Amino acid sequence: MLELLGLFVLLLLGWLWYDSLEAREAAVRASRRACEAEGLLFLDDTVGIVSLKPARDTEGRLKLQRAYDFEYSDTGNNRRQGSVVMLGKRVALLNVGLRTAPDVVTLH
Image (tube, rainbow, N blue to C red; front, side):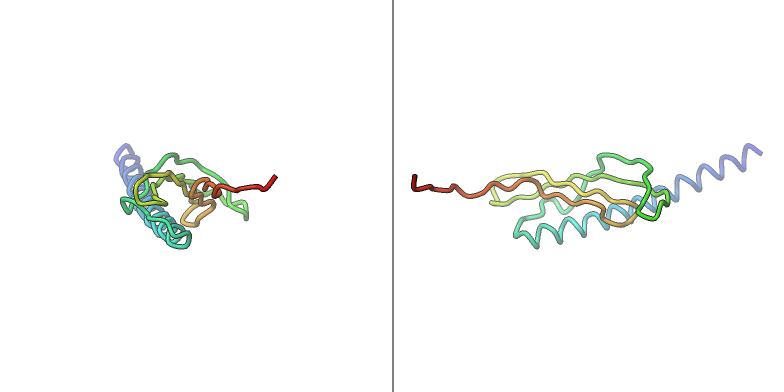
């Protein structure tokens, strides 16, 4: 009985590892596309996991929610932080940070 429990735990860990790899690759692709669309440089070509927790999708199914951080540059001389939240293997939220507006000159 103990052997079956150990095998089940190993299979569960293997599934979690494989599922996390697929979610991470989807997060990298989404982050890269968002940076390209905004004219930003996606730095280091990677994301780093910040959190992992269970959450429900719009249909009420339980999935793993993973939050990742990544770095990008808007000038080529700096590093800014963005984030992407994955619900399962789908992007739930993607943020490339606050962008400052150019200086506005008023005439009064």
